Structure formats: C-alpha cells, structure tokens
Length: 410
Image (cartoon, rainbow, N blue to C red; front, side):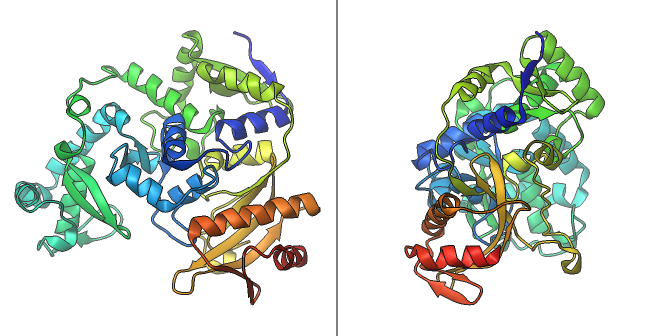
C-alpha cells in the first residue's frame, strides 16, 4: 500500500486521540484506566513520587476522576494488571502474561548462573509457601551480593531473580517496597500454562514491534527510548517493519515536511480517519507524566510538537535547564508550558515550584481557564487541600489568584 500522507497537525491529533488525550480526561473510572492500558499495551512504572508516581501521572491525564487507588485495585485486588518488564519497569494487562515467556526464560537462566541466589531460592519458595507473601524485610539472608545497579541483600536478590523468572509475582507494595507471592496463586491457570504464542524468533519480533507501535500509536524507526527493552536492534527492526508491511499488518505514513517515514498499525487506521474528519472541540489542558507513552520518543516529540523535553532527574542540579521533576503542559494539540509540582504530604499542599511558558506562547483567558480546570482535577487526583505558588497559597477552587500567578510566571 502507498504511504498515507498527513500534515503535522493531523499527525499530532491522531497521536493525541490514540493516547486518549484528544481531549484529555475523556475516560472515567477503573474501566477507563484498564481500557487505556489494554490499548497501549503497557505504561511505564517509576518509583519516584513528587506528585504521584509516573504510572499514576499517566492515568490522571486521561481519567477524569482518577485516584491512585484505582490502579492499586486493578493490580492487587482485581488482578487485571501485573507489574512486569516491557519498556523497562512497566504495568501491563494480565492477559499478556504468556507473551513474555521468552523474557522470563532468559531471566531463569541468569538465576541459575548466580550460585548464591540459586542456593537459597528453594528455601525462599518454601518460606512463601508456608508463610504467605513476603518482602526482603521478612527474610534473613542479609549478606551483600553484587546486583545489577548496586550491591544489595541476598534476600532481595533472590526475590527479584525469582520474580523476573516468573516464579513470583508482586502481591502488593508497601510504598515502593515489593511484597511477593507465588505466581500460580494469582495468574489464571489458562494463562499460566498456555503454550508459547510466538514459537519462533520472527513471530516474536513481529509481535513485539507491533506491540511497541501500539504503545505509542505512531512511530518511526530511529533510535530512541520508544524502542528500549526490545529483543531486536535497529537492523532487526528494519527487517521486521518490512515484513509487517508486506503482510499488511502496518501502514507507512509520510508526514509533510519530514523525510523519515512513520508507521502505524493497520487496525488503527479507522481511528486515524475518524480523527482527521472530526470537528474541532474546545482545547483542554493536561499535565503529562515525564515517562508518558506520548513522550517516549523525545526526538519525534520535538519534530511533531516542537517540544524539546528532557527529564532532568539524573542531570546534575547545576546543569538543569528547568528542574528535577518537570511535567509538560498540553493544551489542545500543542505544549504550552512546563510545571514543577511537589505534593507536600504532611500539609496537604500542592507546591508549584516553577512554571515556564514555552517560547512564543501568549496565554489568553481560554487557555488560562483550561489550565485552572486542569489544576482542579490535579488537586483532586492528589487529594491536596490547596495550592502554593511562589510563597502564596489559596484554595484550589478560587481561580483568580492562580490565573494572576500564572500570568506573572510568564
């Protein structure tokens, strides 16, 4: 099939519609959260919590009435979602469990290669069988062993190894500490023992590239964070994309003014056509997560949206252009600002440490009203009582002060 040609505006709006951000906050409840995660395959998990963890920030921008308890229930009560590895640490639907068998088998071989971990793994399993869900605090293997990022306790290394290999699952979390249980107690039998869905490498690569396209909606084959965690390199992706084109599983897309081709899944063409033909709606605002699916490929984000975004958590303070934990602010189909929010858990205050308008943005009353409405939803999501900006605080339902402060911030 010949490539579809899109304007930049059409490409932006399709990406936003696919990501449930055209408009934002258009879904509701646990079912809305689950439907969104099923659409994109996974959302990325990160334990840092400045104004909610990354997964919660992803969902609050799409789910109008979102509270973090919804995700916890889907993970640990309903068992509709699981903590796992996809694009790095992630959360994905439980029905996808069989497709990651290869990843777990690889981890199992690594477990066997660790003599110390392998020696105590049977004892750890017996302890969980007899005592129920356990964390590293509940085991007494306290000697340090070399681990992926830093030396850690043998208890933690054993639990994590058994988790990566699929023997254990995260039963729940106490803040960021994982409490593990036996996988067979929580994954349905028909998923636990299903045959490998992708028997050969070619099928596995096809599935994974399609999945990653579905995680974003529209992607190019340039190196970038959107392809992290994949079992194929750039050469393998090129061959896989060509094969998927020949099998009519994906569609090439040419965006005007960009020489490099993009790709989307054939199954998403209906949404593309619907988005192109849809009437304009009043623009709304949303604060996006730093590891939001939409911003996984930051070079593509800059090319299509004009936003040069970098998550500066790991950047030395003196070298930061903005701040430690900064969120992009979406308005309509453009990014108009950046916010550095911090929830003060003890006082119930949302502190806006900094606010930056993007170059060339002149906020009008409609934009400021949309941003204030976004603040209202954000405060509800965080269960905070008031907003503090530049040393001042007020009730989030009072809009005049906030609008004044945002004008001053520009």
